[in-house]
Image 1: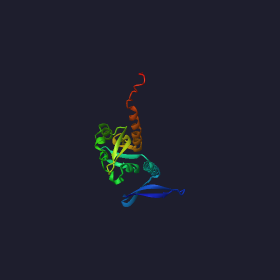
Image 2: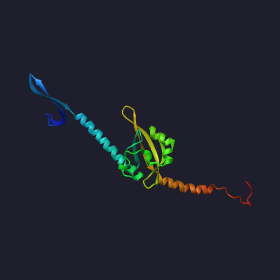
Image 3: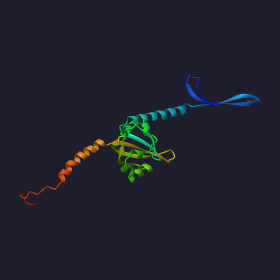
Image 4: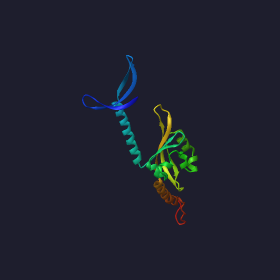
Length: 193
């Protein structure tokens, strides 16, 4: 039998332990054999890891950038609230689905983007994501591969920035530039230059 227990030192300090109990024979009579392990360092490491995970989750949950984590088959493993907002869907409708289910044919077919996502290469590119109502949301994507402790690729993650406003401003600025680039009619009264 194995269980955790709190022990008290002579100083009164309480510390976590793991107790392993087994029945053994001692001089032909049954006896309990107890092995006690001090778990203080392991518990500190576990708490530090849990605190780090909580901190990272708070960062991702409060980020204005969308976070998208996929496995090697491009299946969604995790997204943050900003990504849900960009996609116009609750988290439950995104998890477990392939990333390409949220892009249109033009973006799904782009070999560079597909290659980056499937191979998990680091890169930055633009992509338009499709919402349930059919509207397209242009995004700037910064993607990176994700490796395990042995250096084996286990997926990819990306940060998505909604660039709808930037695209709108670019369109507004391009219109006047196109009008200015039209060849001017020469004034017949002016001298040639």
